[in-house]
Image 1 (spheres, rainbow, N blue to C red):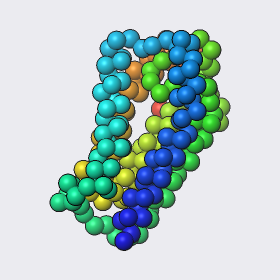
Image 2 (cartoon, one colour):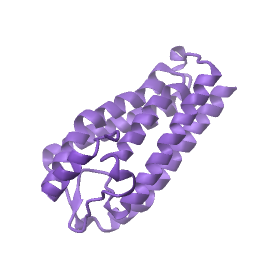
Image 3 (cartoon, helix red, strand yellow):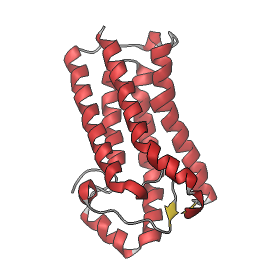
Image 4 (cartoon, helix red, strand yellow):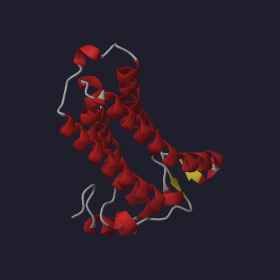
Length: 196
Protein backbone atom coordinates (compact mmCIF):
# COMPACT_ATOMS: atom_id res chain seq x y z
CA UNK A 1 0.00 0.00 0.00
CA UNK A 2 1.92 3.01 -1.25
CA UNK A 3 -0.42 5.50 0.46
CA UNK A 4 0.73 4.17 3.87
CA UNK A 5 4.35 4.77 2.91
CA UNK A 6 3.67 8.34 1.80
CA UNK A 7 1.58 9.06 4.90
CA UNK A 8 4.41 7.70 7.05
CA UNK A 9 6.88 9.90 5.16
CA UNK A 10 4.67 12.92 5.84
CA UNK A 11 4.59 12.25 9.59
CA UNK A 12 8.31 11.46 9.71
CA UNK A 13 8.93 14.87 8.08
CA UNK A 14 6.56 16.51 10.52
CA UNK A 15 8.40 15.00 13.49
CA UNK A 16 11.74 16.05 11.97
CA UNK A 17 10.50 19.64 11.57
CA UNK A 18 9.29 19.71 15.16
CA UNK A 19 12.56 18.21 16.42
CA UNK A 20 14.44 21.05 14.68
CA UNK A 21 12.46 23.60 16.68
CA UNK A 22 12.45 21.85 20.05
CA UNK A 23 15.84 23.09 21.35
CA UNK A 24 14.90 26.71 20.55
CA UNK A 25 11.45 26.34 22.10
CA UNK A 26 12.94 24.97 25.31
CA UNK A 27 15.55 27.74 25.41
CA UNK A 28 12.88 30.38 24.79
CA UNK A 29 10.69 28.94 27.53
CA UNK A 30 13.58 29.16 30.01
CA UNK A 31 14.53 32.70 28.94
CA UNK A 32 11.03 34.08 28.43
CA UNK A 33 11.78 37.44 30.07
CA UNK A 34 14.37 38.25 27.38
CA UNK A 35 11.72 38.41 24.64
CA UNK A 36 9.30 41.26 24.08
CA UNK A 37 5.78 40.08 23.21
CA UNK A 38 3.85 41.28 20.22
CA UNK A 39 0.97 43.72 20.55
CA UNK A 40 -2.46 42.46 21.57
CA UNK A 41 -3.76 42.52 17.96
CA UNK A 42 -0.68 40.63 16.80
CA UNK A 43 -1.25 38.03 19.52
CA UNK A 44 -4.81 37.51 18.30
CA UNK A 45 -3.71 37.10 14.68
CA UNK A 46 -0.93 34.76 15.87
CA UNK A 47 -3.53 32.53 17.54
CA UNK A 48 -5.54 32.42 14.32
CA UNK A 49 -2.48 31.56 12.24
CA UNK A 50 -1.17 28.97 14.72
CA UNK A 51 -4.62 27.42 14.98
CA UNK A 52 -4.77 27.14 11.19
CA UNK A 53 -1.30 25.59 11.06
CA UNK A 54 -2.12 23.07 13.80
CA UNK A 55 -5.38 22.15 12.07
CA UNK A 56 -3.91 21.98 8.56
CA UNK A 57 -0.58 20.33 9.24
CA UNK A 58 -1.34 18.21 12.32
CA UNK A 59 -5.02 17.59 13.09
CA UNK A 60 -6.60 16.88 9.69
CA UNK A 61 -3.66 14.70 8.56
CA UNK A 62 -3.89 12.72 11.82
CA UNK A 63 -7.67 12.32 11.45
CA UNK A 64 -7.11 11.10 7.87
CA UNK A 65 -4.52 8.51 8.90
CA UNK A 66 -5.98 7.33 12.21
CA UNK A 67 -9.74 7.32 11.56
CA UNK A 68 -12.16 6.42 8.76
CA UNK A 69 -13.96 9.79 9.12
CA UNK A 70 -12.50 11.37 5.98
CA UNK A 71 -12.26 8.30 3.73
CA UNK A 72 -15.17 9.45 1.52
CA UNK A 73 -12.91 12.30 0.43
CA UNK A 74 -9.92 10.23 -0.67
CA UNK A 75 -8.55 10.34 -4.20
CA UNK A 76 -5.97 8.26 -6.03
CA UNK A 77 -2.91 9.73 -7.74
CA UNK A 78 -0.40 7.92 -9.92
CA UNK A 79 2.54 6.65 -7.86
CA UNK A 80 5.02 8.76 -9.85
CA UNK A 81 3.14 11.87 -8.73
CA UNK A 82 3.38 10.80 -5.09
CA UNK A 83 7.12 10.23 -5.52
CA UNK A 84 7.40 13.72 -7.02
CA UNK A 85 5.53 15.09 -4.00
CA UNK A 86 7.94 13.20 -1.73
CA UNK A 87 10.91 14.84 -3.47
CA UNK A 88 9.33 18.30 -3.12
CA UNK A 89 8.62 17.58 0.55
CA UNK A 90 12.23 16.56 1.21
CA UNK A 91 13.54 19.70 -0.50
CA UNK A 92 11.26 21.75 1.75
CA UNK A 93 12.59 19.96 4.83
CA UNK A 94 16.19 20.62 3.74
CA UNK A 95 15.39 24.33 3.31
CA UNK A 96 13.83 24.40 6.78
CA UNK A 97 16.82 22.62 8.31
CA UNK A 98 19.24 25.10 6.73
CA UNK A 99 17.16 28.10 7.77
CA UNK A 100 16.75 27.02 11.38
CA UNK A 101 20.44 26.21 11.71
CA UNK A 102 21.32 29.64 10.33
CA UNK A 103 18.84 31.46 12.59
CA UNK A 104 19.92 29.60 15.71
CA UNK A 105 19.07 31.83 18.69
CA UNK A 106 17.27 34.44 16.57
CA UNK A 107 14.46 32.03 15.73
CA UNK A 108 11.09 32.76 17.31
CA UNK A 109 7.94 30.66 17.21
CA UNK A 110 5.76 33.76 17.52
CA UNK A 111 6.01 37.44 16.63
CA UNK A 112 8.51 38.57 19.25
CA UNK A 113 11.93 40.14 19.38
CA UNK A 114 14.67 39.96 21.97
CA UNK A 115 17.18 42.61 22.97
CA UNK A 116 20.01 40.38 21.74
CA UNK A 117 18.33 39.44 18.47
CA UNK A 118 20.48 39.74 15.37
CA UNK A 119 19.40 40.50 11.82
CA UNK A 120 20.36 37.31 10.00
CA UNK A 121 21.28 37.96 6.35
CA UNK A 122 23.78 35.20 5.59
CA UNK A 123 23.40 31.63 4.38
CA UNK A 124 20.01 30.94 2.84
CA UNK A 125 18.85 34.32 4.20
CA UNK A 126 21.05 36.04 1.63
CA UNK A 127 18.59 34.80 -1.03
CA UNK A 128 15.21 34.93 0.72
CA UNK A 129 13.92 36.76 3.79
CA UNK A 130 11.62 33.92 4.83
CA UNK A 131 13.14 30.54 4.00
CA UNK A 132 11.14 28.75 6.71
CA UNK A 133 7.96 29.99 5.07
CA UNK A 134 9.42 29.01 1.71
CA UNK A 135 9.85 25.50 3.12
CA UNK A 136 6.16 25.56 4.06
CA UNK A 137 5.26 26.45 0.47
CA UNK A 138 7.09 23.29 -0.61
CA UNK A 139 5.29 21.45 2.20
CA UNK A 140 1.87 22.65 1.03
CA UNK A 141 2.70 21.72 -2.57
CA UNK A 142 3.69 18.20 -1.51
CA UNK A 143 0.97 17.48 1.04
CA UNK A 144 -1.79 16.62 -1.50
CA UNK A 145 0.50 14.04 -3.09
CA UNK A 146 1.45 12.45 0.23
CA UNK A 147 -1.97 12.55 1.89
CA UNK A 148 -4.43 11.73 -0.86
CA UNK A 149 -7.52 13.19 0.72
CA UNK A 150 -9.22 16.46 -0.12
CA UNK A 151 -9.32 17.67 3.49
CA UNK A 152 -5.99 16.33 4.75
CA UNK A 153 -4.15 16.98 1.49
CA UNK A 154 -5.31 20.54 0.88
CA UNK A 155 -5.37 21.70 4.50
CA UNK A 156 -1.65 22.52 4.36
CA UNK A 157 -2.35 25.00 1.57
CA UNK A 158 -4.91 26.78 3.76
CA UNK A 159 -2.38 26.96 6.61
CA UNK A 160 0.32 28.41 4.35
CA UNK A 161 -2.12 30.97 2.93
CA UNK A 162 -2.85 32.15 6.48
CA UNK A 163 0.88 32.55 7.10
CA UNK A 164 1.39 34.28 3.76
CA UNK A 165 -1.51 36.73 4.15
CA UNK A 166 -1.58 37.36 7.90
CA UNK A 167 1.71 36.59 9.58
CA UNK A 168 4.36 37.59 7.04
CA UNK A 169 3.24 41.24 6.65
CA UNK A 170 3.11 41.63 10.45
CA UNK A 171 6.49 39.96 10.85
CA UNK A 172 8.08 42.23 8.28
CA UNK A 173 6.63 45.28 10.05
CA UNK A 174 8.08 44.01 13.33
CA UNK A 175 11.49 43.57 11.69
CA UNK A 176 11.37 47.11 10.25
CA UNK A 177 10.57 48.45 13.73
CA UNK A 178 13.43 46.42 15.25
CA UNK A 179 16.12 46.99 12.61
CA UNK A 180 14.99 50.08 10.65
CA UNK A 181 16.95 50.94 7.52
CA UNK A 182 19.07 47.79 7.78
CA UNK A 183 15.95 45.69 7.26
CA UNK A 184 14.64 47.97 4.50
CA UNK A 185 17.98 47.57 2.66
CA UNK A 186 17.78 43.82 3.19
CA UNK A 187 14.24 43.82 1.76
CA UNK A 188 15.47 45.69 -1.32
CA UNK A 189 18.05 43.05 -2.18
CA UNK A 190 16.19 39.83 -1.31
CA UNK A 191 12.91 38.24 -2.25
CA UNK A 192 10.21 37.68 0.33
CA UNK A 193 9.99 33.93 -0.33
CA UNK A 194 11.78 33.26 -3.58
CA UNK A 195 15.21 34.66 -4.55
CA UNK A 196 15.15 37.80 -6.69
